[in-house]
Length: 197
Image 1 (tube, rainbow, N blue to C red):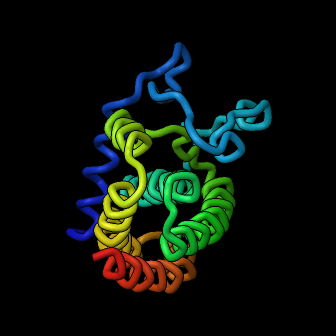
Image 2 (image 1 turned 90 degrees about the vertical axis):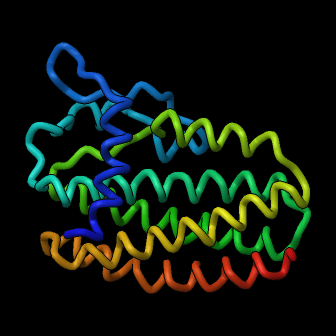
Image 3 (image 1 turned 90 degrees about the horizontal axis):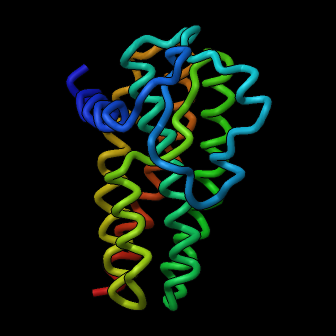
């Protein structure tokens, strides 16, 4: 439960960036960025806006929302790294992040749909600000910032996913399937980051 505290703090940040529409449905203030196919709201999403019918408790919702935002960020920053970096090892790492986190995002969306939980589709303002700042970096400065961030973020993500063992079965199974991939990412991030020094 204590390990989930970090996830709940991130969710609090997400909640602070929300307001509700006239029907009481949560709306994010931030506009979607990056890969529109991951964060596009289409008519099928609108037709099944089931936020109020979620079968997920507070801890489960916090985990899923935090994992969704983190996964979106991994994909978008991976794409940014492919554009900005000239380092072959950083590009290889970024390509792996895009592939693995896209798959994990698809898996998480399936779990969320089953549990009738609407995942965030845009970044909170502070995350969007960090991504925007990274877009201004280039070359070795970008590589170092990106890889430092990947090492640190994967430590937090591993803690979050390990804490999911107390959540309902569907979420716990998603976390268990994804955890070995995240552990591999952490090892890759450390090796890649060390190569930049």
